[in-house]
Every structure is written in structure tokens, then in C-alpha cells.
Length: 138
Ligand SMILES: Nc1ncnc2c1ncn2[C@@H]1O[C@H](COP(=O)(O)OP(=O)(O)OP(=O)(O)O)[C@@H](O)[C@H]1O
Ligand SMILES: [Mg+2]
Image 1 (spheres, helix red, strand yellow):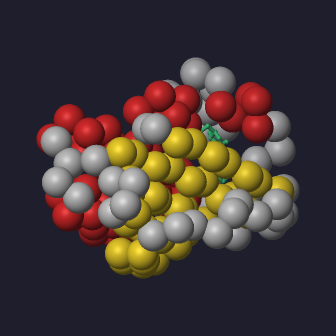
Image 2 (cartoon, rainbow, N blue to C red):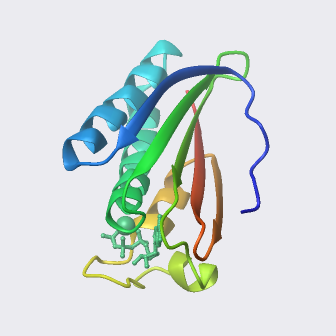
């Protein structure tokens, strides 16, 4: 799979997402990372909400995922990577389109997440997995 560049900043927390409860734990960690950089509530909520959608996709479609949260204090950014080794995404343009779902969702997770954050990247390879990266400025 096409790899995203190495992140700057410090690893804050790493979470394995294998059950529903892990999504809660991981999203709380994203919130704490934003708190650590003194983020305003609205900015924190945006990133936490977006990350939550991505973690849920990683669990539901990726069959589980690893979440890596990095803090870049110098740039006041929190970075969230969600990596799975699931089936991957065949048609990225379609997956990103609002209203498209291969399941029973609303198909608004990816597009919604993208609009909520300051940085959004996604790479995926069928049969290999999916790597989503989000960042929010505190
Ligand atoms: N990690 C992933 N691995 C494989 N496919 C994915 C992954 N994330 C998203 N997809 C695909 O992209 C589609 C769109 O995702 P999106 O989050 O926008 O909508 P949804 O999850 O189907 O519904 P919603 O998030 O609104 O409940 C999914 O239906 C799925 O087919
Ligand atoms: Mg979704």
C-alpha cells in the first residue's frame, strides 16, 4: 500500500480498535490530545467527531484497526492515523461521495470527516487495507 509520510511530533497514544468500546476509548484519547494543546471546545469536537467516524469504518469495514495519535506541539496539531488490513477500497471517488454506502450506513462518514478536519488523507489498496490520516489544529 502507498504509505503516508512519517509524522512529525510525538506519539501520544496507540489504540487497537477491535470492539465498539475501543472506539470510545480512542476518541477520548483524541480529545485528551487536543486538551493537552489547549484546544477550544469546538476544534476538539470537530476532530473527535471525525476520528470517531473513521474508527467506526475501521472496525466495521476494516475488521478492526489501529489508531495512532500524535501531538505536534510546535504546530499545535493533533494527528490521527487509523490503519486497517481489511479489504481496502476499490473505488475511492465513490467511497468519498456523500450518500454512498456499501453497507447500511448513511454514506456520510468519510465526506463528513473530511469537512471537519484541517488535514485529510486516505490511501487504500484492495486486499491490503486502508490508512486514513486526519489532523486538527488546536
Ligand atoms: N476502512 C475501510 N475499509 C474498507 N472500506 C471502507 C473503509 N472505510 C470506508 N469504506 C467504504 O466506504 C464507504 C463509505 O464510507 P462512509 O463512512 O462515508 O459511509 P458508511 O460507513 O457506509 O456510512 P456512515 O458512515 O454514514 O454510517 C463504506 O460504505 C465502505 O464501503
Ligand atoms: Mg462510516
